[in-house]
Amino acid sequence: MAGNSSRKGAIRASKKAPTGGTGGKNKKRLTGKGPTPKAEDRPYHAAAKRKKAVAKKTAGKTPSTRAPRGDRPRGEIVAGRNAVLEALRESVPSTELLVARSIEVDDRVAESLKLALHLGLPIREAHRAEVEGISPNSQGIILAIKPYQYSSFEEIMQRAKYPALVVALDGVTDPRNLGAIIRSAAAFGAAGVIMTERRAASMTASAWKSSAGAAARLPIAQVTNLARTIDAAKKEGLFVVGLDGESEELISSMKIAAEAIMIVVGSEGKGLARLTREKCDLVISIPISATTESLNASVATAIALFFVDQARRKA
Image: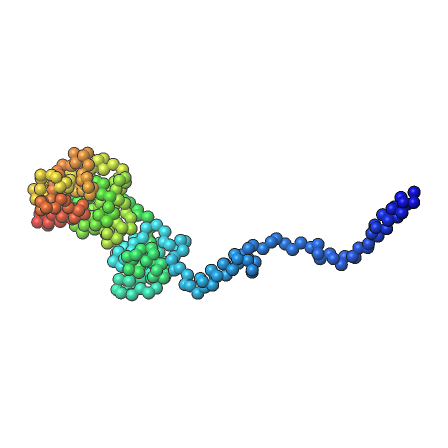
């Protein structure tokens, strides 16, 4: 039919003829452009503007002078000019001497530096803020010490001169009291100090500082069982004298001060433990004013040691 033939021709005429390729001219359009940048790295993005504002605000500020964790002395430290000097004089095993750059060099600091050089100890300078960050009361100088090497009861007895004088601590928990007791024991000629391993203070930096270096020249022993140590002291010929504020026996009545003795000091709050008290040959108290509840453990120990020292001088 004429109508059908004309429609077919129209369809053929509407089809496009095939076209040729570009010859590789548009190859770059197919190349990938990489991952999408982060928001803060796109110049016109809000996140990028915030990052730029923060950078501008913090520019020019002084970085923190706090010591990096890796530069801080490891282990226990002794801080303060007197404590450091005493420890160095006694050749306390140490790892490093830390000195503030702006420190005022007095006789103590000068001698500490000289002793550290003589001992071959590393000396490190640091910002004042770094030193104070480690110990606020350092006075600009810190000594890092090795873990304390405890002695034994047997070694203390070998060191003791007749008549022996030994101090034993029954649960003293304050390291400052411990240090002060060690200092008094050294001052009045004690052969050593004995304390328990558990529920008691140990030789921390506070104890070192309170002892003012006495811990370096006086042997200190840790024992697992004080009652057994008291029995061992008795076998060595020592009289065991306990200090207890509730005892009716006054220190002035102690007639054995010139003999070989062990003075046992109780804890700050509870005093002597029941078993320890029972093991003592004598329990004495120090008379004080009725308005005062009790004496500090280190003060009571110092008074008792002074009494023993005076009695021995007279003898």
